[in-house]
Image 1 (cartoon, protein in one colour):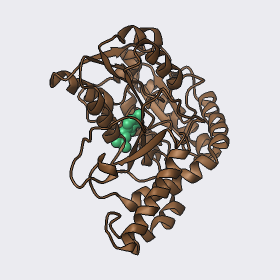
Image 2 (image 1 turned 180 degrees about the horizontal axis):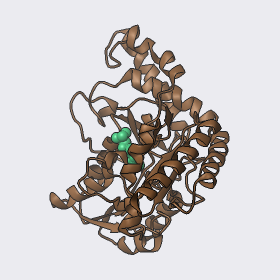
Image 3 (image 1 turned 180 degrees about the vertical axis):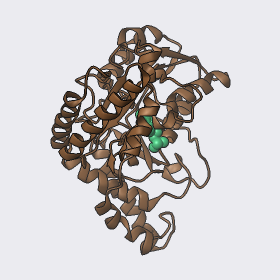
Image 4 (image 1 turned 60 degrees about the vertical axis):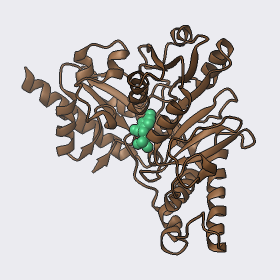
Length: 376
Ligand code: PLP
């Protein structure tokens, strides 16, 4: 099997699993317990928090709240801060933000505003800024687009937004960026969502990085864990495994970035370009290559590839339950329905090999040519 759907999820880091196992089998104590075993676990959580946070942020200015996933982090940010007036986001967001913004309207909390995209999948910054006014309470702009891999310069955008309205709370969904792009958070970014399972961690573990001076109204209340910001007994095993996996991922981040960029270009150059059109920009995240087999159905190709042992996606895995046939993000980039219908998302991890890329090229060209012949 060749697994090239790593933007949907990645294989858990097995060495990190092994290292974290003790938190399931021996050190399984509740971190809030008052005896010393509990206290020790609480100290271990503190270390994991520091590892994860320090990779991208200044620990004197930011802190990390553990959540159950990237979706929860995005929802917590939106419902915690879009509380009046209007809230601005982009037409390219993952459903964790897009659906939360729709809910702001349904519940009459705030007026949602959506900034259009450029053809390469980045937000049109000028048009985004035009939507920000004195009544804007919250702005959310994703860091790396999960369908196209396009990168928004969120530090620069946050700065421009704050120049227009300094009271705005600025959030970014960093789920596809964390551990993959060389990056550090600027002080103008107030909130940043991360998720473990995109870089070798487990599904069901996430975090919301927040500026320390910001008061977070908790979305989940109860026992007051996470300093009252997110109740619920912490997933100690999952968090430790996340920290161990992140430690490894960040130690090879730059080398992986360059190597995967080369693999992405090798794949693209090997594809039959009379069949496939490239939608991902050259300067996007190297981890994602979005292509369209224009005139063919991406979903059919996905199943044909699956039969040959190649696992790829058609867009956001989280939208595969949605009723709409076409990717809203691809349409928002200005492509027509025929292009949107042919979309395939191929996404890499640090474990992807050259041999896998060579085999994937052969399979994609073969199924693309076969299907085209059948359609003629
Ligand atoms: N945001 C982006 C950009 C994503 O790609 C994903 C997952 O696909 C999420 C949020 C949701 O993260 P999780 O699966 O941890 O809820």
